[in-house]
Length: 145
Image (cartoon, rainbow, N blue to C red; front, side, top):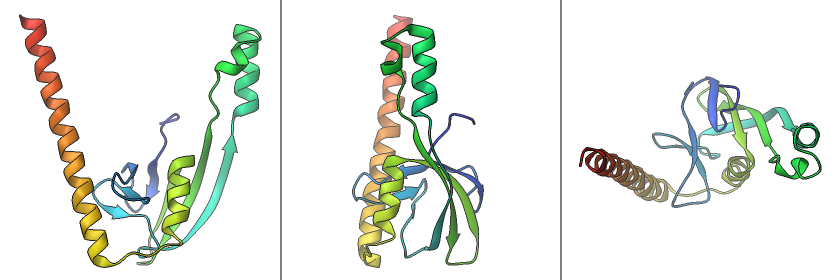
């Protein structure tokens, strides 16, 4: 799991993915738990790291002058979440999810808004899954024919 990002590393919701809501500016755990101040008591930064310099040096050593530009900047953070129910989680997130967490800890939405956003997100997830299966089916038929 060395290269995996946007997931719960340990604790409550262990192993679950963290995704950006398609229908709001918040992040959520797959399955519908929004990462907002409604559910979270506190977030602490455990480790924040940027591998820009080392990756650029490696790229330069392997590929020459242009190689340093080929390496992507990796802005990831490991955060500790203290849930309002007393549990904790350790999560690893990228910059986009981190920004959505900051928004979620500052803005509040009503229970009805949570439900509407969650329902839309779940419909989008189900549609994406359906499209994936259709694409796989088309590829299988194409290879058979």
